[in-house]
Image (cartoon, rainbow, N blue to C red):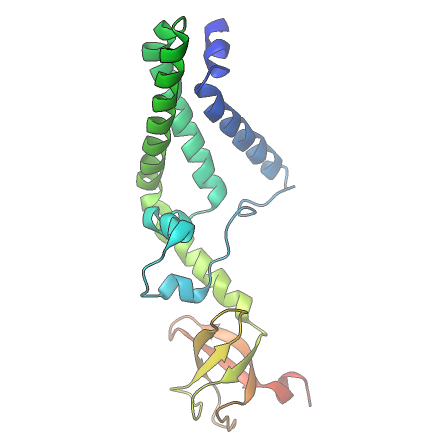
Length: 216
């Protein structure tokens, strides 16, 4: 047991030990209902999910490994667990004998840390691949629900039961949405409307006029 704790608090294992400990404490607190599983997740818009433009930056890196489709807390836990496991056993077999050679010990530790992190990221991406479609479906559904009750501006010349477009100002470039309405409404370009519900089958939104929504 003394050897275990000695390695647990040794460089570079201690870095993954700290991350893993934080993750374990988080899941314990989440089990008590004090935190939600997706409290660390990044906001992803409907356009981000369906966009044909190649993603860039940190968001692009997340999408490359599919990490944007799974709760970030689960990603961090898997990376911490895999990285810690690889680091612990590699340290015990390869680096522990170098403990008295300070310079070589830390150089080997840095190399091990980098290798462990890269391996953990790729293995995490591999392990979450089977469950990504489930979480992606839940994420898309939540994004659609977040638009319900929002005010939009009609973009097409008219809106019917079969066609129509509107734009939702999200503070950025805006979201172009497929919208439908009852033929009793005579929407024109530039009119304001409110999203009433989402039709998952047709992948469009049912809208009503702003006046009807306000009961005028």
